[in-house]
Image (cartoon, rainbow, N blue to C red; front, side, top):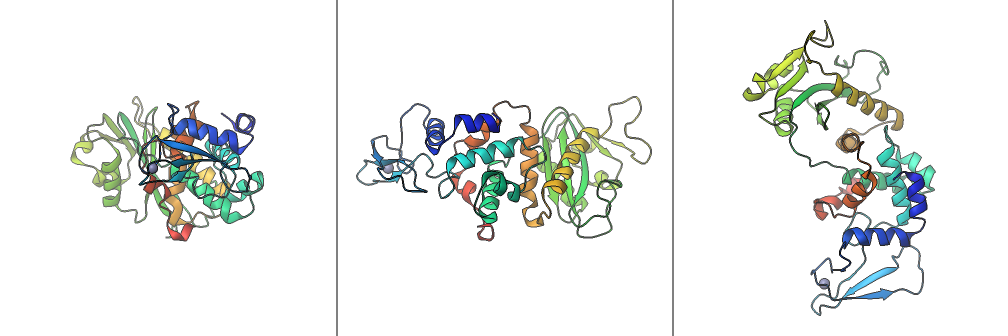
Length: 318
Ligand SMILES: [Zn+2]
């Protein structure tokens, strides 16, 4: 569903809320989110007060009596933004290959403040955190550097470590024809790389390809070391007569870098992992026709992501 479809299908908050209700209670039985009881009554608000959901329910369990709506306990719960703006923002974000800044969202959607748009964008990113599984098959691993004010923007070798310490290493791991995983490695050390590789690559994966940087020799699990082959980038991009190269992880990096440079003036290192999640998720669902609903489902907390985690946003971001 692209932005046009979304604006047609969900012109008002009522349609959005109905859709979330269908996602939340697919069998049509509304259940109290607190006690799980299905004996509830509908409260109809006569006044259409701004910022108040019109469709409310009351739990009839005497010990509970919770009032709730379809958005209670979801990422939309405490938002003052109209739901149709959230839907539009999501449609924009899931399709924006190079991502979109909070400022652009603010402008496009007529959101009052930058802060509100920024907070919304981060909550959408939160729903994009992949739990995934371990990468397997042929996995390419490479690193790139993000941050600082690079004079080499758009040029220079991406594998060459910049001199400035302000740059942060991002490790990219990609299954051929499959998913990608980006991990921020603040210290750039072999043992941190090893930890990230062990956390995300299946120990019995078929093959692991990297460039010939010495760091990878030390970074591997003994099991993976047996499956490891390297291409020496100072000589060639692919080992002749083989499929040993890291070109597909590099294409994922190039989209990440163009996005980070193009859409964000400055990415705070503190939030880098959230941007990485966003790029990773978008890459991994790029062929999924249903990506709008799939992501919305996560935002509504229906996908297996605990609510507490979904809304756990440090105070500094509020
Ligand atoms: Zn209840």
